[in-house]
Length: 401
Image (cartoon, rainbow, N blue to C red; front, side, top):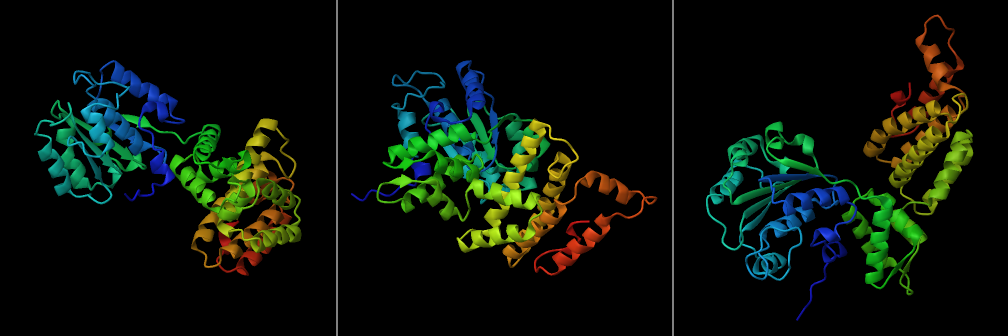
């Protein structure tokens, strides 16, 4: 019989709380609720994409539905996996667990279907469980229709919501739920997990490659597993995934190269900085990825300066670095809208390099705000920056003032 291929993120999807990675506080809280039999009628899990919200919702549904081999077991934080409810859940055939995607079913009529079905007792398990993913996508009227049932649901009903944008959910709904945040998974935990998954798949993932994937995924397990799977498809005959191949796949460059570029920028070596950018581009680097790498590297440098306590009167002081950070933030919008993002990248590097020549940006900013002070050379520099920006398509000359 044909065995359909499962992507890694689905193949290794956790089925118990023991399998969850990097969510220790959440697991501890849920275990306490379940083991003490103090289970609220509505849960809401929120966090970034791919961090495990829907997975946790399904695990919780399994815990609430497990009846044990003797069909007498109460709710538990350790589902047996062999009872009729657990088997039905594994096969996606449990009649009392209904999962809805609020992104595609946003209207009040969809919610009314849920409300109507809450009146019927569960068939297989002890609860009727409604999992609503991306719940923030529901319309205002749909939320309003849900309020009364959400506040006083029948005893056999549990609601489990998941969202990436909790701020879009009405306060009246949030106040009726027990809210649990899911944090981005730490690099160490995610790196070890990726190395373990690669080993199970018969591939060796070196530490450098794992670190690159973790940085790119930003703590999202699903994104990291997708990148791992893509890397495995491009691995050599020895089934070894090295950082170089991952960087080439992503259109990025090594962190050491980005640090080298920042050293040139902070030394105001504009021509050398642009030459380095050009070499990256010829090597297949993506300008948008390079821009993000510049931002990440600058953030790490700022944190290092804060920890080291470097003086404020040199061109790598915290004040100066924060000013460069603002330039990157403002120019990032131009990068998104530009037809030629490499032009914006080059223009931004020029601005950063020129700005890095200022010994004390803070004093210059103060003097510019004081009408009694004779204009400093920063006025002329601003004119130079404006002139540079005007010559680069996709850039806005007023970004640095």
